[in-house]
Amino acid sequence: MTTNFYDHWREVPEDDWRWPNFSPDEIACRGTGKLLVNEQALDKLQALRDRLGKPLIVRSAYRSPEHNRAVGGATRSKHLDGAAFDIAMANHDPVAFEAAARKVGFLGFGFYPRSGFMHIDLGPARQWGERFPARPAPFAAETPPAREILVQSRTMKGGGAAGVATLGAAGVEVAQQVLAETQTAILPLVPYLATLRWVFIAVALGGIAVTIYARLDDWRRGRR
Image (spheres, one colour):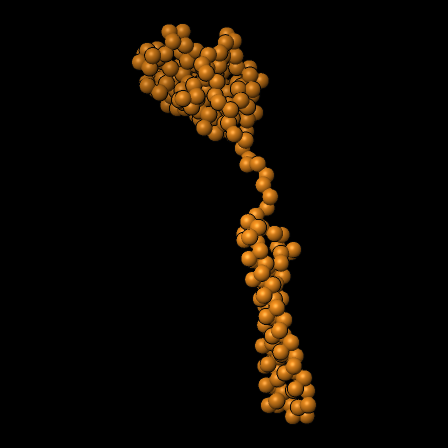
């Protein structure tokens, strides 16, 4: 097991740091800034990060002896060896996280659901604390669609018919006026255009009626 000690994490040569998803200050002692680089432990931490494919929020990693005493850590804590990490579970499913951590070689597990983190270390194999409660499924149960499919919606069909018919009636009226004013040669057609306009108006009214009925029926059935 290769380790390197630094009086402060800023002393770590940039070229010597080979764990892309973590930085020296994340792994350093929170109380003193000192850093013990445990390469085996960091390799496993990086492997865990790669396996999960999402960030690991490190709450605590290396602890200097004085800081470990200050926070009430165990006298033989693996944090003193740079071989332990406390990882927040805010963005992880604890069950999946634990399984992945075991896969990459972590052996010691401490569960702290009230504080929202899990302790992992290189061993010996052991575990303590109360496991995290089961989380609800990440996706809500499938429910019937609240709306009708638009292409099959009676409301859309009725509204569309009313709109098309309204435009048709307006167009016919304009055409009627133009023909009456400028096309004297075909004035006999004007009465037929008037009839056609009333047909469009009737279709528009029918479409509006269908729309209103469909909307009321949807509300009655609990749809939106």
